[in-house]
Amino acid sequence: MEGGSRMDALGKRLQGFRLENGWSKRTTAKQLGVSIPSIIRWEEGTSEPNDYNRYKIERLLIGHSPAPARRRIVQLSLFPRYVKETTEELT
Image (cartoon, rainbow, N blue to C red; front, side, top):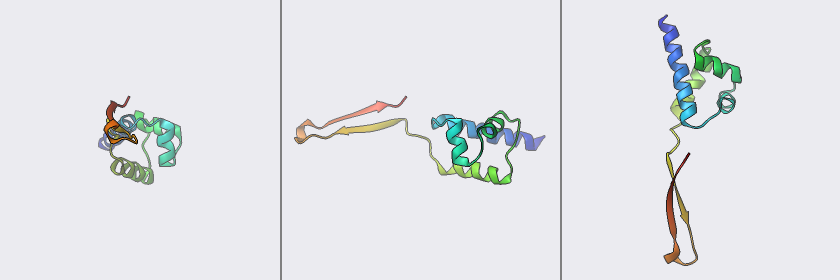
């Protein structure tokens, strides 16, 4: 049963990564080269990926950093004293 809990953890990590980065199941499936139902089964823990797909998931989780919570917007002007800078929250 230990292997099952390890796979559940991978599915939860994948789901957390996906939600944190605002990815849909479709986008995640496309990035991994798998079907949407596979993503659903892995996240729910009803199925586990084979070794190759597990490798691709780990590479995805390691290779991408979380999306930034803020972005900086700078509006330039022909006149330097009129430069406007704002920071906005991403939703």
